[in-house]
Image 1 (tube, helix red, strand yellow):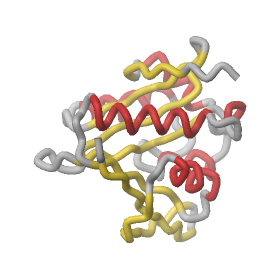
Image 2 (cartoon, one colour):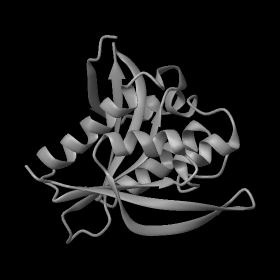
Image 3 (tube, one colour):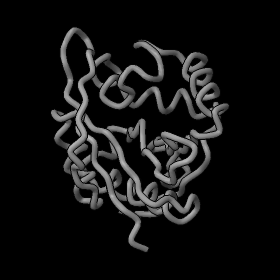
Length: 170
């Protein structure tokens, strides 16, 4: 595997590719938590929501490319403008690249970006408890449960959320 991954700022032209990474309602909500819009979401609604979030100046969307192909998407977001802590969110990787180490490499790049470019003191993310593959990937990146949990009502069920965090020790 050529492991060269490159981060690029999100552009609306990437929406179709990113949305193609999920083809059912449950998998869509696993990474979007219904924050980006209801399923099914089209490119225009997705881009409108990204534009709305970017307008806060606290939200930074990115794609990750491998051999010029967009294989992943994530965002960095400040929860509060006055706190130097970034949340990694909306993490999704093309299913054909899962289980090959690309997710970990993508998260490592996101963490490095948060610490180097944004000079963040820490990063955190939220993962649904039953999303074992994502949870294990985040643990491999050094994130640890911080005791914060939440519950989302999705598809008529309660989905438990675990927050994980990593401090910048650079």
